[in-house]
Length: 254
Ligand code: BV8
Ligand code: ZN
Image (cartoon, rainbow, N blue to C red; front, side, top):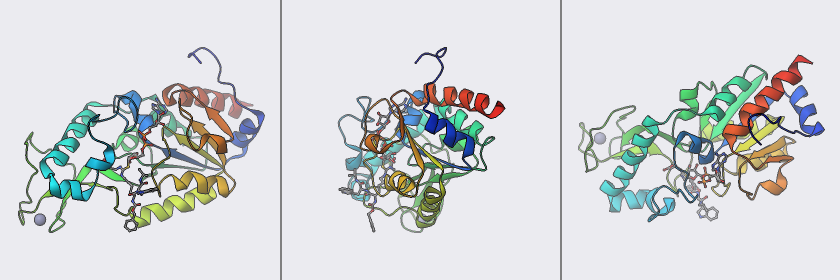
């Protein structure tokens, strides 16, 4: 679909949009790819030579702290130079049309917050936050110098790690429980830019569907969720979401 063409939506979707109160946006790395932030598993995968599971885990960090720390420094640099894209911004605009709009994101790139979304639940933490693995001292939104070795805590000398959820680590329980509550209340659940292979996060989309949400998937690829979706747009989020916002404005005028 090019910018000019109008987005085709089903009558069922149009009806839901007109009557919805609670809308949930469940997002993954794909929503940030148009900001220039690489996804994990696509061809532009972050570091071809390593699978995310080999770097994003605590044992890898203990075994090779400098490598893992520099992987995050490499990503932080990309993310700091990135800007929220039209998809992130369209989600902020949706807040004007519905009683409750919640973003449940697997991303750690802080782009939903920077776009101005009010209710963002970060299931996997945030790359701009860090803490000492020994004493827990926080080092949030600190600009670490371009050092090659993992920084040490000024209080106790412990290694500092990014405040993200690594494979094998539990998600922040309060946040995850809130995401589950929102999923159970959602009238519409958008699933945007995720391969839906990471659990328990991916379970949020299934839960929303189970509790009656109208499931809308936006992803150029087919995923495990596609067969479950009530509406699928195999297009980029940066194209679909602004077009959907235009349709919404028209619908709301009627
Ligand atoms: C836990 C933070 C246990 C770090 C991340 C076997 C089976 C099932 C599960 C498991 C298993 N073995 C292990 C597990 C559990 C494991 C898991 O799910 N593994 C998977 C890989 C099989 N999960 C865990 O370990 C979780 N913890 O289970 O704890 C436990 C329980 C009790 C007590 C103790 C422990 C923790 C998982 C969290 C891992 N951390 N990230 C970091 O970012 O560095 S996960 C990482 O993957 C990111 O968060 C990312 O968001 C997430 C999912 O990836 P996606 O976001 O979907 O990105 P991906 O690249 O895959 O896909 C991008 C999509 O976008 C594509 O579909 C593409 O087509 C699309 N796209 C591209 N461009 C666009 C687009 N879409 C729209 N528009 C575009 N322009
Ligand atoms: Zn410390």
